[in-house]
Amino acid sequence: MMSVVNDLWSKERRARWSLGPVVVCLMLGGCLASFDDRIVITEHDWDAALVIEHVIAIVLEERLGLEVDIVPVELVMAFAAMHRGDGSMDVAPDFWIPNRGELYEQYVAQGSRESVLVNDRPYTGEQGFYIPGYVQDTFGIHHVDDLTDPETAKLFDSDGNGLGEYWVGPPGWNTVQINQLKAKSYGFDEHFEPIIISDAVFKAKLEVDIQAERPVLFYYWTPEWIHAAFDLRMLEEPPFDGYAMASMKNDPQYNPDGCWNLVLPEEDPDWLENGSISCAFPPATIYVSYAKSLVERQPRAARFLKQVYFDPATIDQWVLRRARENVDATEIAREWIEANPDIVAEWLDGIEVGGTAPTG
Image (cartoon, rainbow, N blue to C red; front, side, top):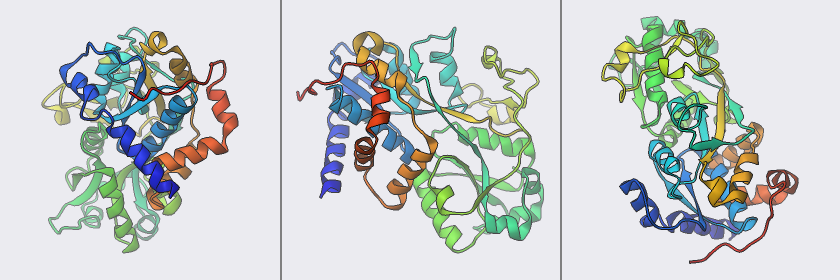
């Protein structure tokens, strides 16, 4: 029963304004209405983010007395709205760098618009190309260079068209372009074709492939439940030695001769020809990002978002329950908050708690 109640509570909160003022304001690029009593959170479409955003929402509503809406919005639009600071979008949790480095450079980095802030203690993750352990043990595939062998590529050809397949990420993610640039730079793009499908569809397919012990090559990251469920091996790549793009000149990892020259389609129609990435991802840094305007509009919420932090091992367990046990994200979030009062107290240190969330 509790799962049903939490599921309905979650759906009601997400739907409260999903077809109303929030989306209208986002579409129009601004809004005159007051959002002072509401915090609007971007809903992402992967399991870790879904739980994180519900943890944040419950604390904001039940400890700080604020009303929260969770709205599915593409990240570029969400950052543009946070930049405006009108309250039409306030929080984008699980913000991955370097994957969305262009947004960091536009809105967060020193010397940029500096209209979006991030929490003090991000968590870290790894990203790369993976294969199941049985594929590595049987065929000796350890390095991305091994994929340039046409005979190796044929192992991953599931439709008989002569090309192996590899999953590069969901539609709309920059990893789609990053991983295609990698394949070109490493030289295995001639023998493979990229597959672009949602994370949920890919994971369902992955389970079937692994049960049948079929070869499968895919991009993925940690933390995620699939690493706890399956024996997965990351392929070796040359180490990251710096960003070569001019847009990253202010980044400490900028290197004009570096291995990472990301060009996106919106920057150059010939992005695949003119870009190059010939190294591993640098360790990912994952932030909770929020509108700087919250510091004035909702200072308690801003301080909480600055102080909130998450542990990758905890996220692994959240995602395992969400994806494998089909537990609602709100239920996972609420149970964890109730079981970890000391951590929540750290998040709320120095903040006056209490209040009743508005109902109108």
